Image 1 (tube, rainbow, N blue to C red):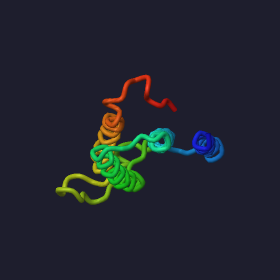
Image 2: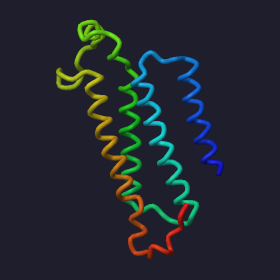
Image 3: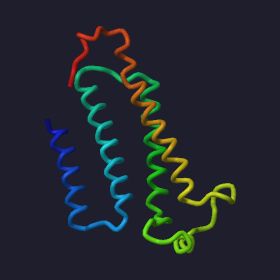
Length: 144
């Protein structure tokens, strides 16, 4: 119950922030809400899985660690704030930085690469997280 209350507090805080601060970049604000809810769901599911006596196998654990690291790097590049949707493409180009990857891709491109890898990793975690229940009958699985 505590986890659900914490999740609600975080979501209501994000909603209050949106109402009070009125962020200029509403699309990024919605993206932040989506990412927060994805991470909250994963944390809730993993904690409840461990509390119910289930275990996490090695491959899902490696996926969780690798995906968390990639999410960290992706969010670092996301918060560089190179692009904005409020300006024309010509005005937005003035904020471009030097290309850092292969002398062609800038921070915003790297954000797209890393976030797509992180999303794939997140779905891979979902796919493999319940591998320890493969041999358990459905009516014996603890539902939370």
